Image (cartoon, rainbow, N blue to C red; front, side, top):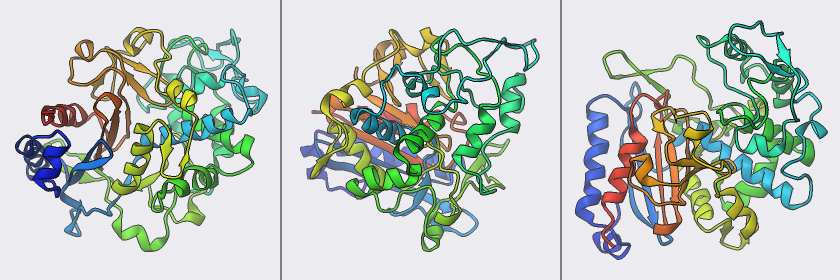
Length: 406
């Protein structure tokens, strides 16, 4: 039963029989060949209520998913980067409405592209500068690339981050800022490189690499000893392989493994998606998020700063801000704070949940959410890209909440 005794689960308000539905769901995804392996962990009221793993971290090597398996968490890096930036905000380093160009002059220097049907050099001037708030809320105009997208997306794809060439975020940002923005800052919400630019801002202001800042201010204080942009070589065998779906619905290892990089090789520290972590380590971060920025012996953010981070900054849901869905997730009834999504209306989102819960996920189908109303965190770790392949997050959301009885 997920490795936790029945009395503990009942004490924490869960039905052990209903939690067993998660076991069956995990087994089905592995035995059907949809996933190589996965791990799920649920905490409530400060205790672990469910923790289970199923399948393999490496199919070819027949190596199982274990408690200490290391996962590429990709965009689950973004909340940590946002916390890092908010730490500097609390110290008076900047204001949320301050232009990013005050610190990184190249940001916004190429103007705004006029859109599909226009040449990339057909641009208009910025109506206003890109602000730090724009970066934190994905309203900056920095998009991700797409090889089959419009002209700007294709150019972004061709100039994407180069993890294996020794370049740094400073190098990558120089290339990124050589292209125009996709839209006027603040005009709409659109997912992209905003948090990577925010991570570079942390570096510029602090005088440290993002990895150093993370280690000193977040990872070490929380005891996240096996999380980083690069890992010691001795930990590499514990890293799960990264898989993609086959046309038949099975799993196929991606030929290019994004990591694990040795620390001396992790020069490009992507604040938008570069971290590797374990279930135990990420639970420490999720627990601090549930505790409104607190952890044993300290506090990451002040209470009012944290509450602002997990409040909706959109003035409505994301569907009303220009993006009806992302990956396999609808944005009806979902808002966005600073670095995390915020549940506004579960009925409108057509999914079980609580108003005020905050969340995010990663490209390899990882996900986490924090529900203050239920005093609950849920973490999903797996390695299947893209995350839009299956509706894993929505499935697990239902399975987690249906098990609550108290």
